[in-house]
Length: 282
View 1 (cartoon, rainbow, N blue to C red):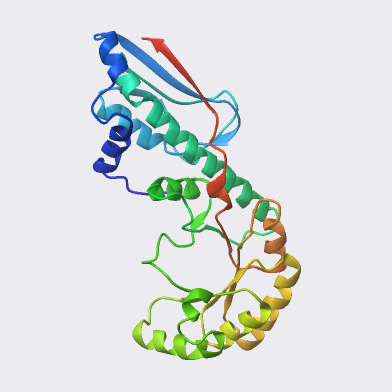
View 2: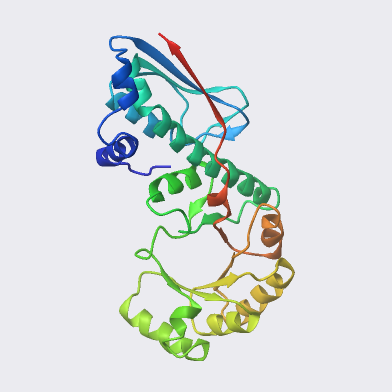
């Protein structure tokens, strides 16, 4: 689950909460005192972003004495991270590191729930997360998605060709889609062309156009099987994916209905994980 965080990323995580210094700790003057911070789970969870918290701790001079890597499932009451050192530095990174882990572990835990629901039906349907995560939190959200067993659907506008209905407003609609697809294939021969559809009739036009992937938006599981069958009759190799409204309650139904991939942002709206913090004198 390699998501690269630069040194500048780590600095910004610290600086966001401490733009010029910790006023309270500076006034209390507890210099030369050592403290210990321990993070414990309050419920079962998939841990995520402990490595980035570790880097925050080390950057401020703390010694990390225990760490559980991202992607590991912990039971309630288990330890995930521990560090000790200058008490002032401990207070400097306490909250920002904790908030990051809570946010990321919440996403990772919900992703794992979704993946396990699908795996109960089949091992052949990936769970993909959209780019609908909070702005400026892309790396954390993507790492959490991977830690939970999901895959990125797209990391941004730069890495896929995904045509929406809103694009087709300016190109002649679905009836002209075959011309659009042919034009793109002349210019770009390496990437697959994905086109979103909202009805079975639109999906059939997408399949007939020669597009590589039909992305069905908010089609019910009960209609999905027929949609895929009719699309494959027009384009045998076309991939048909389910998107829009996919969640923990219906993911298995979409997988059973024949979806090749499940695309969702449901995991990004998970409540943060609840983590207990113990601060002690060392």
